[in-house]
View 1 (cartoon, rainbow over the protein chains, first blue to last red):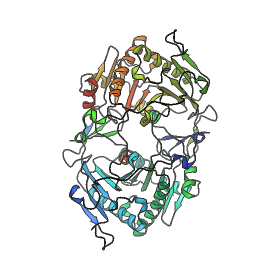
View 2 (view 1 turned 45 degrees about the vertical axis):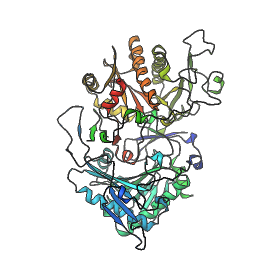
View 3 (view 1 turned 60 degrees about the vertical axis):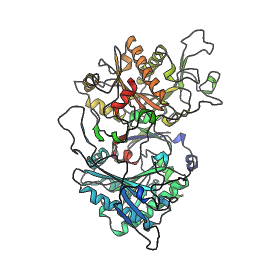
View 4 (view 1 turned 180 degrees about the horizontal axis):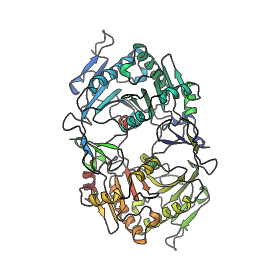
Amino acid sequence: MPELRKDYILNRYVIIATERGKRPDQFKAKKTSKQVKNCFFCPGNENLTPPEIGRQLLDASDVKGWSIRYFPNKFPAVHQEGKPDITTDNDFFTYADAFGVHEVIVETPDHNKELADLSPDYISEILKIYKQRIEILSEFPGVKYVTVFKNHGETAGTSIIHTHSQIIAYNIVPVIIQEKEEKSGKDCPYCKIINIEKNSFRRCFENNSMIAFTPYASRFPFEIWIFPKRHVINITRFNEDEFIELAEILKKVLLKLKELNAPYNMYLHYGIEKLHFQIVIAPRLAKWAGFEFSTGTIINSMPPEKAAEFYRG
Amino acid sequence: MPELRKDYILNRYVIIATERGKRPDQFKAKKTSKQVKNCFFCPGNENLTPPEIGRQLLDASDVKGWSIRYFPNKFPAVHQEGKPDITTDNDFFTYADAFGVHEVIVETPDHNKELADLSPDYISEILKIYKQRIEILSEFPGVKYVTVFKNHGETAGTSIIHTHSQIIAYNIVPVIIQEKEEKSGKDCPYCKIINIEKNSFRRCFENNSMIAFTPYASRFPFEIWIFPKRHVINITRFNEDEFIELAEILKKVLLKLKELNAPYNMYLHYGIEKLHFQIVIAPRLAKWAGFEFSTGTIINSMPPEKAAEFYRG
């Protein structure tokens, strides 16, 4: 029997279409070829990207000179020009300049590796660059929120295959963050949810400080959320162990998705004041269509309980 | 300069990335082949669908015996079983059975035609079936809203290419409709918006009773909305002229999208009490990725003003 489920706290519904349910391997995507003639993100082509903001060298003997590189996006969606403030004196036509900073983090010089292939230590260094960029860009005048996200695979919106993350710092607090903040009262709902999901069929992975589970009202087949178990609102406040332990869990999740050749979007949701930090991974193995866009209700034919079995298995 | 724009009335933002702007023909999709061995929706295969609810014969001499056929979806997302009422006595885990009716309307026996190819008179007959299904299914106990939508093209989520529409009547009022209803006070905002857009660069087509324009905060390249000019909340209250004139405008819009081989989702938004009826057409020529899902802010690289030029041109 298909079930209509509401998100833990948001006014957001899904239909878990259990009877249409397929086995996990029936969701498996085709492997897409990674051969590219002239990759902008490969070593040797550093001069083709905008001037570097920073680099990390994790193995001093590496002749390429960098392990992780970050620089402004050549085709930014937002600009550091114009007026960041939104009009308030008008009906219907509310706007601002799309003000902010758009950056790219190339995660490895190796064109053939994906994030899942890197070691937890290595991944934790990428997470620390997320932290650094959030800290720095949050201080930019006009910036209201720094979004960190990653698109893996063409179906998930990547135009350049070489594994990378993106940062868009811009001039509003995203509506979804606003809503989550508003629903996070004095008592954190996610602290309670974590305690429940720790013992549920949706629990996937756990270590000392982190937990991963498939959310009750998953909107994507194999959607999975990772939380620090303690109430911490931002990765900027993580301790050393938390960086490594988040990287460990993240690697486990991504290796399972690699089994399905799953394209995915990954993003950080952090709090301004109250919201419990989380990472959302949204595999893109199904399409949203007329019903989804019309209603906001998402049909998902992979029950999260079954997806969790796949992750654990 | 890219612009951050808010929807006319909803708390929904887009970034209109003007500088990334491409010419309309650069959005052109590949034409997908329509050859299928055994189409469930073709004449001769009527026995492969669930028992017919109804049919229309528009040309009595037609040997196929029908012009439009409608029947239950063989793989319904919702069922007429279980309890339609949503739990109210719990934290976090709110649910109901996904209760309702899922139907299919095959728009023509001709496998090689699409909706754009049919005459306005013919299209108006399809619209009248929408009206009929909304009227009938709204009366079903447990049904709170009857959604009518159409997915055209594989990228837009069609699994069967033969042109058809779908109805999902289910047990909540969609959140987007709730929000639009709430924002529709005593004075209808859309009546005012129509009066403004009538004279704007976003106006595309207009006839005696209908108007089509690209919305100020378009989330999709070439997104276009069609409204009746008078304040009418539902297609069930249309008069004869309005059916024909809506069909005329719809055909014009879809013929332009056909030039781009654009996959699209189309859906009806009607009011429960106040909301101005509208049809939304969302071409699927761009992908939503990590930024969009993380923030709810959609990057659209086709400014609606330029899209309107394409429609008019």
